[in-house]
Length: 458
Image (cartoon, rainbow, N blue to C red; front, side, top):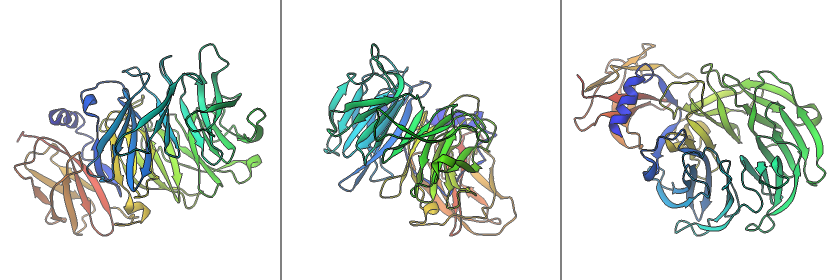
C-alpha cells in the first residue's frame, strides 16, 4: 500500500504541494480489509450514521454490502459488523441508506437480484440483525428518504419486473418498521427527494425542482416548482435548512455551481445565490446536507466542502478537505456521501476509492478548538517528493509561529514541532517510511494541511 501511495504521489507531483485542507482535521481513514486490493470503478458508495447508547457508528456501502464501523474513538475505527448485499460484486455502483428509529433501510440500484434490506441496529456494538430481505415490494432503487415524522419511506426509481413500478417515486408506510406497506406512487421519477412533514422536494433531474404535498399519496397536491434557473444542469440532490425557508441543491453536472433557493413561498421559489464548483471546469458536487448555519457537501474530485449559509444570499466556503488524490477529469471519482449529524460533531465522508473518512470540523462549527480563519496564509513545500528534509515556503513572507504535525493516512501524528519563515525546515525522522503524508500547520487563528510524499531517492 505504501508503494502504491508513493507511485500515485509521484505521478501527480504537480498537485502534491497544493493545499488539500483548510479548517478540517482528518481523524482517521478506514477501508475494508477484503477490499484493500479491489480495483472496481467505485469500491465504496453511500455513507450514513447512527448513535446508540453513547456510541457512534458510520455505515458505509461497498460493492459487497453494508459495513457498520464504530467510530466512537475517531482515531481508531473498528468494523463491528458486515451485512452482505443481496446483489454484490464489482457491478454494484449505488447503495443508499436511511434509518427510522434503530432500523436501517438499505437499497441497491444494480441487478434484478436486489432487495430491500432492513437491519435492526439495537444490538450494537455486539451485532446487527437482518430482519427483512425481500424483493416483494421492489427490486431496485436509486435513493431512499424517510420522513420520520410521518413514518413514510420514499423510494426513488423504484422498479420491479412484472409490476407497475417502472422508475416512479413509490411511497411506503413504516407503521410497522419491519414490514413496510405500499401506499402508492407519484408520477415523477426524481433522482432524489427530501421530505419533511409530507412536503416533498423532488430533485427532478433536468426538470428542476418540484414540490408536492404528499399527505395523500394517491392524490398529491402540487405546491410549486423551479424549472428554469441559472447554471442549470442535472438536479441531483438537495436539503432543506433547519428553519424550512431555504432549500439547497446540487446539479450533478461538471462545472455547475450549487443553488440556494428561497422556498418560504412555494408558489414563488427563487434562487438567492450560486456557490461552489469553481475549483475547476470538471468540479462536480454530489450529495449535500444542511445542518445549522452550515452546508456539508461531498464533491467528487474535491472532497468534503463546508459552506457557511448564515446569509443565504452570500454563501461562503468555511473549510475543505480533499479526499481524492488524483486529478480532476470528466468522469466520476472521489467523495460520494457525507453525514454531519453525529452528536460529537464528527463529520463522516465516503470516498469511492478511499473508503471512510472521519473528520473533526470543530474549527468551523466553533464547538471546540480553532475558529475559522478569514485571512489564511499561503504555504508550499519543497522538494516534493522529499527524502529527508522538508522546506516550507511562507509565500507572503510572514514571520508567524506555527505548530506542525506530520500525519499518516490513518490519522496518526508521527512528528510535531514549531516552525516559521526563518526556521522553516523539518528534518524527517529516520523511521518515516516511504508513502503519502499530511503536514498540518496551525496556530490559534488558522490551520492548513499539505500533501507530502516521502521517497528514498536523494
